[in-house]
Every structure is written in C-alpha cells, then in structure tokens.
Image (cartoon, rainbow, N blue to C red):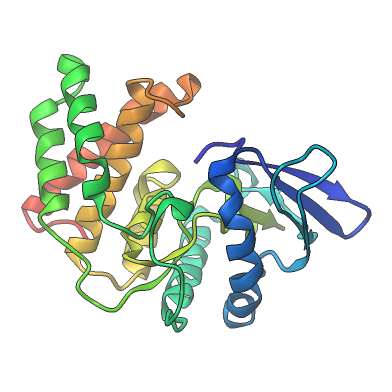
Length: 270
C-alpha cells in the first residue's frame, strides 16, 4: 500500500472525505462502511467512524466515504514521550482487534492486497527480488527467512487484521497513541501481517516491548519476518509501488530481520 491509495480531505470542522485514487482501492469503501461501526465499540482506541458514503458522479468514478474527524498527528519517534509504552499500547490494540468475533468478516483477497492471507501469494516476487540483489544482501539468509515463513501457517480460527499497521496510520496526542486509522486493507485471517511494524518502526527496547506484549507463537513471528522481508525487498529492488527514498531504510530492515531470524533459530527471540 502506498501513500496515494486514497486522497483524504478535511471537511468542515469535524469530518474528513476519503476518496480512492484507483479502481483497486474502490472495494475498500463498502468494506469500511460495513465493518468499522461494528469494530469501533469493541476497541480500546478510536478508529474512523463512517458518517456517509458517496456515489460515483461528477466525473469521479468510484464510491467514497465521509468519516468523523480524528484529531492527532501521525506517529513519529520524536513526537512520542515513551516509545516502549507506545509499542505496548499498539500491541494491546492489535490484541483487542484479534479478539473480536471474525464470523462473516471479509477473508483476505484483492481488497486487502492479501493481508491476512498466505505469503505464498508473493513467492515469485520475493524469489526474484532476492536473486536481483545479489551481493547487496545476504541472499542465503534471506532465502532461509522466506523458507521458514512459508513452512508455517495460521492454524487457528481467522482473526481480524488491520492490514497496514504503519506509522502513517497511527495517530498521536500528548505523546501517546490516540487512534488507529485506514482500515482499507483489513480482513480476517492470519495476524502475522500486522506485526511488521516491529522492524519498520520499532527497534531495541521498543521492539522487544511490542513483541512481548503480543501473545503469539514463534511461527507467527516467523511469518511476520517473511512479510517484513517481502516488503523491504520490493522497495530495495524498485518494483512497482516502491518508494526509492525508502531503500536505505529497507536495507536496514532486511539486515534486522535476518539477524533476528538467526537468533530465533537459536531459540533467543519471539
């Protein structure tokens, strides 16, 4: 998912208008309209509350939404008073989301860009990216991370996943996590995709706090490393949807994921 999947505008004093930017995002509108009102009351932090759904017209080809405005700024390390506490708050939010009855919820698919589904969807893309990077990364180690991730599966009942847990979708007020937004990639399935922020935003003490606060088994974290590896690889190799400004950060993420995989192989990480 990129920063341009939807265009969002402040509407009056207390609302936002959110408009998909391409056909592949349009199905997310009805999904959010249906499910966010059911999820919101069961979560410990505010999420977007739909107020109305607009129809295509006036030259604009897709449905769109109006939501209640949620105050706050997107999460940045400098804006947080206590990063480990923020990590725990996010973990508790995700755990609460996973506890909501998922019966009838939308299975992973094109609407969620397969978040909540199997990593096998990205098998070919990942293998090509590893091969393309050559000696820029530890390709053997990357292959081992990927193989380990694919060797596991979520064998419990499907749970709710947000699908795009990233700093830009986390709001902060007073140095604390105050709301979670953008449920366009939400689905029911495997929660491993929601754990990638452990490497994309957290490190050291905050990463450990996040991992410790989520009661998931080592296999889930193995798949999470697979998701993190896939995303970082497509950025570094410049595949469609990649942001070249993020390549250096993505190389660091790859190295962190590989290092944690080696520790996990020795039984020393989640």
